[in-house]
Every structure is written in structure tokens, then in C-alpha cells.
Image (cartoon, rainbow, N blue to C red):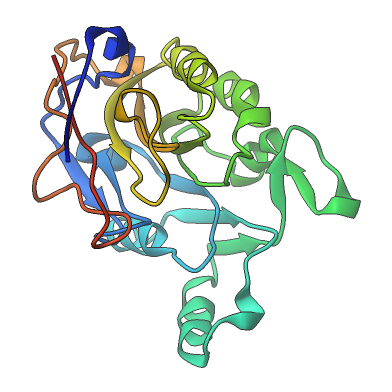
Length: 242
């Protein structure tokens, strides 16, 4: 489904970079990231495991010596199939660690909650890339994420409730744009659509301002060969701008 967004949505338009690559699977769990930012990063902070860690696997294939810290306090590892459990335990070993904790604005051991600032301190790097899909848990830690922008080079972030709360979605994006540029976004087709065809979950790729000299906007957002359906067979919102 081709959706042309009006000029009132230009705050969402990505800047044009020429080195986007897909990291992760072809469907849900894969995201577009500039190769240059991957090259400059030396570790991955990953939030949200579920049953898909193809992004982390692809990152490891590119940077086999990088630390990968995964946070998910509700990952259903015990319910994985035998094959999936084997895959999980073969991957999360050594410098690739899964912490059974949720990320939040503060530490709370009783509720298995780890502050975002502690996650940053634990991985101990000034060249971090962040991948986050935590079903709305991103909102309480946005300020902490931005407070660590000196250490975080790029972010892949799934923002939830975009259609239900469009003003809040815009406020979140504008807040990130104080420190980062949008280089890509993708409408998750597993959710419903709201105003102007914006889906309730938008996947955003941000690159820190100093690492992204481009200012030219890319008005054709969907990229054939790199963008794919989150849910195969569903209607894909293929965005462009007037």
C-alpha cells in the first residue's frame, strides 16, 4: 500500500544516506542501519529478545569480537523448542550475554529491573549501538537514552502507540532529533493504522548528528530489496512524502 504523507509529517522524513544495509531477518526483527555506523560501533546493547535474535546474530557475524548485552526479563526460553533452545544457548555465551532483567529508569531487584544507565555502565564503551523493541517500555527511559548520547552512536528503536497517541509520537521523535537524525523508518504491519496511515508501531533508525553530515531528505522511504513485511502476507505501508 503506497502512502504519501503530507508536509505536516515532514518531521518524520529521513535524511538520505547511501550505505543502509539490513541487519537481521527479512521480516520482524530485521532493521536498516548505515554500514558506516556499524563499522564505528564496538558493542551492541540489545533490548527485547522474545523468540527472535536475528539482529544480534547478524551483528555478531559482522563483529565477532563485539560484546552483546541482551536485556529481557520475560523471554520465554523455557518454552522454546529443543532446536531453538540449542540455538539460544549456542549464541548467548562468552561476551554475548542475556540478562534476565527488564530495562527501566531505576534499579529494582525485586522486579528484575535494571536502569538504562546501569546497562550503559556495564557494557563500558563509548561506541555503543542500541537496538530496542520493548513494547512501550521505551517511554520511561527516553531521557536516559539521550543523556548517554555521547556514548551511543546509533539506535534502532520501535516506538509503540504511534497511531493511538500521535502527538506523543511526534514529541518523542522531536526529542530524539535534538541529538540524532532519522535515516530510516518502517511501518510495522502487525499493528493497526491511524492518522494519515501511520501504523501504531514505527521502527526508527537514528544516527548521532555528528556522524551523519547529510541534510538532504529522502522522500521515498520504502526501499525495495531492504524493506520487507514484518508479517508476511500483511498489507505493507510503503511511505513517501509529498
